[in-house]
Length: 475
Image 1 (tube, one colour):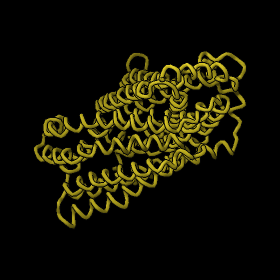
Image 2: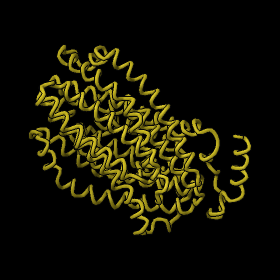
Image 3: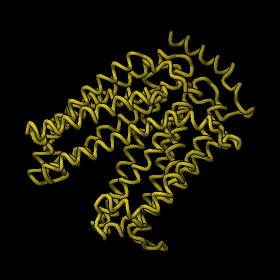
Image 4: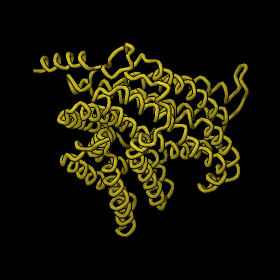
C-alpha cells in the first residue's frame, strides 16, 4: 500500500509540483513530507532542530563562562539584559509561528509562489517590528534595569551591553524568521546550518572582542554583545540570500517585499496569540519566582537549578513540537487532515518515551545532579524535592508541547493561548499560593501545584485536539 501511495505522490509531483513556480528550474523539490513514513518525516525535521538547540545551550553556557572571566558584576548585568532580550524576542517567536503555519500550508498546497510572497512579507515584518520594539527599548534601557532593582554598578555595565544588543535586534528577528521559513518548507537541515553558523561565529568573536586578542579591541562585556551582532548579521544575511537564490524550495523575488496589509494581517492573526501565550507564561514564571522567594535562598536556588534541568529535558520536545507544526501544516495544505492527526499522535508517543527516560533519571539521581550545580546541603534537599515532583510532570509536558505545536501548525494559536493561559493563571498560581502558604506545605506545595496544573493542562489539550476543530482552520 505504502509503495503505491508513494508512486502516486511522485507522479503528482511531476504533473503539478511546479506549475506555480517562477518558470526557472528550482534546485530541487524538497522531499514531500505529506507522503511516505511519518516517523521518518518527523525525525528528518526534528533532529536538525534538536541538534541546533543543544549546540545553542552549550554555547549559552560557554558565553557565560567568557563573561564570567570579566567578573561577577558582568554575569549579573548580562543575565538581566538577556531576560529583556528574550522578552523582546517573544515578538519574533510569535512571528515565526505565524510564518510557519502559513508557509507550511501553502507548500502542502504546492503554492510555492504564494509561500515565497509570505516569506517576503515576514522578512519585512522583522524590520518593522524590530524598529517598533527596539527603538523605545533603546531609549528606556536605564528605566528597565531600574525596574528589576539593579544597583548603579549593574545599570552602568548592563545598559551598555543591552543597548549594543538592541542594535542587532533586526538581525536577531531575521535569524528567527529565515530559520522558520526553511523549517516550514521542510528544509530543516538548512535552519540547523544557519544556527550552527551563527553559534560558531559568536564563539570565535566572543573571546577576541571580550579580551582584545590580537588586533581586536578589548571591549569587556560589550565585546560579547558585538560578537553576537556580528554572528547574527552574517547568518541572517546568508539565510536571506539563500531564499533569494532560487536554489531551494521557494524563491523570494523583489516584488514579495512590497508591503501588503492583508498578508501582514494573515501572519499577525496567528502571531499575536502565539506571542501572547509565551508572554503570559513568562509573566506567570516571574510571579511563581516571587512565591518561591518567600522560602529563602535555598528554595530560589533549587527552583533556578530545577528550571535549567527542565530546559535540558525539553530540548527534544522543542524539536518534535516544531516538526509536528510543519507536518500538520503541510498535510492540511495537501488535503490530508488524517495525516496531520496521525503525525501528532506519533510525535506524542515518541516524546512521551523520551521525556519518561529523563523523568526516571532525574527522579532517581536528583541529589547527585543538583549537587553538580550547588554543594550546599539545604539547596540539594530543596532541589531534590523539586525534581521528585516535577519529573513526574514530564510525560504530561510532552503532550502539551506536541499538541501545542500541532495547533500552531494548523494556524490555531488561540487554543494553546486559552488553555495554557488559564492553566497558569487560574490554576497553577492560585493553587501554589494556597498549598504553600494557606495549607503550609511550603515549597512542596508550589511544586505540587506545578505538577497538578500540568496534568490538567495536558488533559485539556488532549480533549480539545480530539474535537478536531483545528482541521477546519483557514490561514
